[in-house]
Image (tube, rainbow, N blue to C red; front, side, top):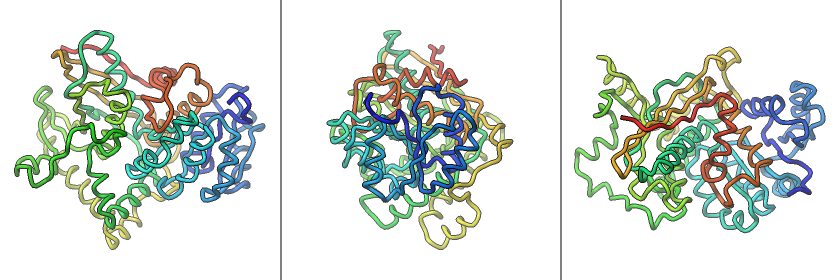
Amino acid sequence: MATREFDLVLYGATGFVGALTAAHLARQAEDNVRIALAGRSRDKLESLRTELGPRAEGWELIAVDASDSEGLRRMAARATAITSTVGPYARYGKELVSACADEGTHYADLTGEVLFVRWSLDEVAARAADTGARIVHACGFDSIPSDLGVYVTAEKVGRDGAGTLRDTTLAVRSLRGGISGGTIDSLRQQAITMNSDAEARRLVSDPYGLSPRRSEEPATPPPSNEGVLTRVKRWIPVGRDAVTGRWTGPFVMSAYNKRIVRMSNTLTDWSYGRGFQYREVIDFGTGLLAPVKAGVTTVGLGLVMGALAWGPTRALLDKVLPKPGDGPTAKQRAAGRFRLEIRTTTSTGAHYQTDVGADYDPGYNGTAIMLGETALSLALDGGRLPARAGVLTPATAMGSVLVERLRAHGFTFEAARAE
């Protein structure tokens, strides 16, 4: 790809997270990195380039619509890597992913849509593998902290000769920041599709729905084979951790993140272990109100997801939820942070803990850094990356190279043996 005109194209650069990613690239990319900004409106692109300052004044501008398959293909042919913030991806992302797969162009996005990733695995993975393209989904807060956190844990366990991962839990210890209108719209569109499509509901409910080798994964027992207590626990996942004594409840991003982490395990021939089990929870502490908070969060999450799937209640929520392109102020983003803790028991009985975190708003400034560094890694680090192509995860596409990039920007990924 040394003959490509651009090292990197940022598509959707004028959107809220797109502009934050462009600003990160303008601050952090080396002067010799050839970057282009792309989107629907050339006028908006020109305005953004001016706002970015002198370091971006030589960046090329590409005006192309998400439905223009030929225009997207021409853009893909000019770049080593393309990163996209244009969602919902099931609606606006398929033409670009197809173009990148055909042209051998690396690709990264922010999708949290199970159905879109499943489409990508089914429709473009083989082509991307043939052309050498790395198609990497989930390169923001969905799901880099989870995916790389478990990757770092498994690497430490392997170096210590402590076996493979078994029961593994990510607990959200602290989280402050907003959720973007684009993320809300992706949830909305997936809920609408599931409401009318039985196959979509089946895929989204399958815990191994993103496995490239689904037939080799554990079977999912039908609900009729479950006992009443098992069903209740599955639908109301509130409980007290037997090890820490802390109350936990469901994490809104858990369902998607778990599938990405399991996909990483499969893509590496189950390097985390055949007995690897993974879940994500929010830690509500040990106080008297902890179980109440966990229960209220569970019920509230269920109501919101149900309301998004039904037309009349969705219309009401649309009036109060963030719109695509909306986001918090710079002051609000500056107060953001996240702290996650991954605990695992290995096949040899050893215990490990991995701390993951950063002092950034997870859905905005933090996501912009994660996506920007992913894009730079795909564009510039080719010789250092794992020798894989096709539809990949952050851990399987970049692994320790991306971990080191993020550590350089203040992210924590630290694994250690625990008592």
